[in-house]
Image (cartoon, rainbow, N blue to C red; front, side, top):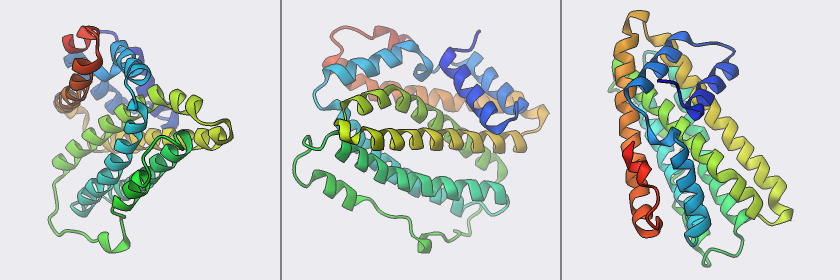
Length: 261
């Protein structure tokens, strides 16, 4: 089966950024897509996002607030993984840098909310959201003493690779809306934030792909493709679950193809 254009673009972005074909990672990724066709690579998924952004009242502002919370929680999830790895310095460095990026992204999404929709949120909502974010401090950066093994680390890296790919796809769907809806005076700053987020998501795809490339032997490609496909399936179902309520409430009888995947 030919790789969908959005999946091909993601793989080529990783290879270009790393200046490396990453043959084992590329083979795992391609083989996994022969096993499952995740919805977030499909054109119907993009059409659904466009439908939601243009027909559901306040959907775009709500997405920003949800993203801020999700990124803040994600930072602490990454820190938990970092705490449990003490045998692979490059992975530890990548996870800790990723953790710091996610914590910063939570603040960036709050900035976007203020810049794009200065009059949309009720008084105190955005400041309350900012205050609810739990910072990652130096005191948090302590190893747990409970080390995971290489196979579990690989599984986490596969999940992170997929999550960052999916997040970058969402960003590509939504970024033009946020830029165009921002007041003209705010558009240059909005553009810088969106470009920064895109660069970070690409970098996260790259470091996880590079680590997978390093950790997997050639003889393990088929097994790892099965694991990658399994995790693609998890995020495929997660994506559909998130779509379901919006389709029921606002789908107007459309998007049946989403659930055919």
